[in-house]
Length: 111
Image (cartoon, rainbow, N blue to C red; front, side, top):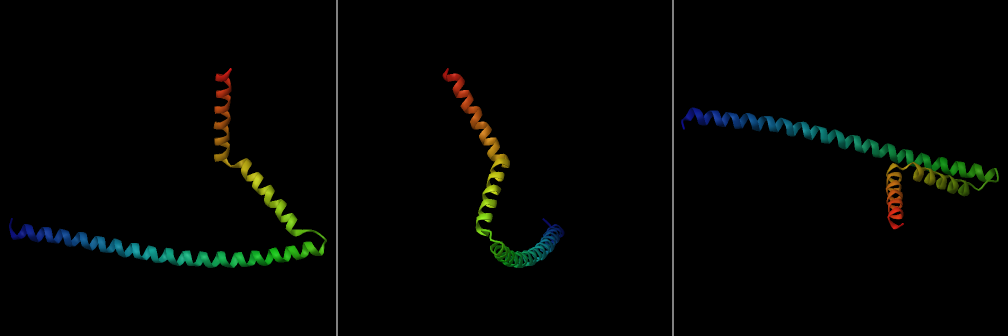
């Protein structure tokens, strides 16, 4: 192997190393951007959570002023939401359909 071949291989390795270095720099920039975006999102969620807590307290105070039990209303709403979610959950629907199908198959073979 001559010096020309060695120099060509070194140049190829150098080009690859430079390309990889550029990719690493781009990845670092993307990661930095994602970290900043995650921090902004965290701050937004914290601010919204605080505002939601304030609104809930205000609504409970208004309900109490009107002679209503706000906690009971919220509990009923949570139950309704849970029931609605259970009725519309496709994974549960598919699992229930499979279970019903298996049960029907078992009944037919038992007769």
